[in-house]
Length: 201
Image (cartoon, rainbow, N blue to C red; front, side, top):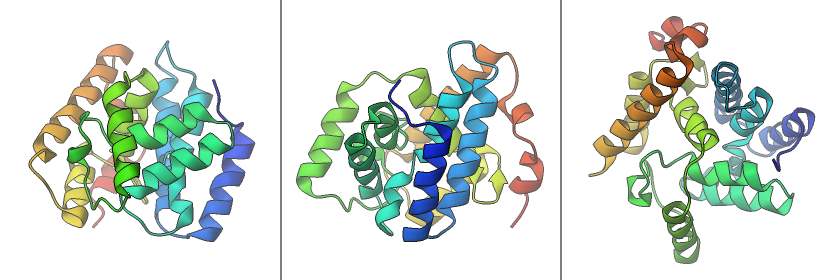
């Protein structure tokens, strides 16, 4: 697959953190850890690739504070470096429900960028890696792993809701069940400290 090495991924995130420091860095690291832990029990996934994809899923935030456009910025950045499989994750991680109108937050993309995202999401068949990062993104805060409900409500409080929010939540829970059925255990068993993080105010 076209992904960087772990060393290169860490260098890219470190550089991004210098350009735009913020809690998104820790969130990315925890997302990578969650992806690695779950992939370790999934026969169709490579834990190292999963880790790298989780590590870089929000890399578009390197360009500054943004909403939807961080996904197209990340896609463009990693595509230019030749890491197409990681670039794909930058786009797909925000849409567990395959409708771009379900996005939580403002659309700060140009009309051309938004149309590209819309066509891309409509035309792609989600892989296990796409769905893995979607669920791991929804299981982590900058302070650690948490219950899915805490993260979903946190995002809703910060970015608001729309008429597809419930459908998006439902799709996220379906992905969680899909992985749990596949690995034969609760995802939470693989996320150390989830109880403590969930109940931190």
